[in-house]
Length: 225
Image: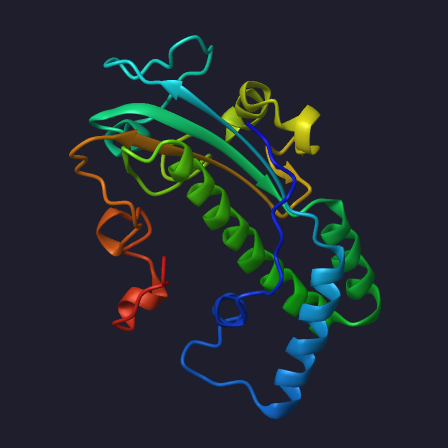
């Protein structure tokens, strides 16, 4: 299912600052002005688009009617007890990439800020799409979003995922030879749906494969996800 009418009217600046490595530090007034300028420019070019498809999930973790293998133990553990999965792709569209490239030529500070803001913005769009899915299937419990390439879920599955989701045709998301998505501010992920699930709907340190290396956790904090 697809809908082009998602509107993003603000960027989560606090999340963008986290990507920039600010931690608990507050930006000074000059930085705040720069954040406002970058946010305004980014919002002018963002064109959020998404596509998702929902499938029945068999007990052997095969997906009903689809030639897509859920490879790796992490995704299978993530989907324990699920009856369905939603395969979702979201993008901010190519205008964001163009804006970042222009800024990299003339103003690297703004380029870094806009890049971080765009990373925050694509997660905001994912949140909105997830709410749309939950409204369509209100009786299920949901897992958190499991991205292609996370843990031992192979990044090499990107193209096959896009084919199943029909993301290239419907919202213009493609994959390059390094299995990276274009436009770059795009996300592919799987959400599990079922009843009495053991997997939380929110990602936490306990189920994160980077918990032992995480600088936030070592400082007694978390990344907010």
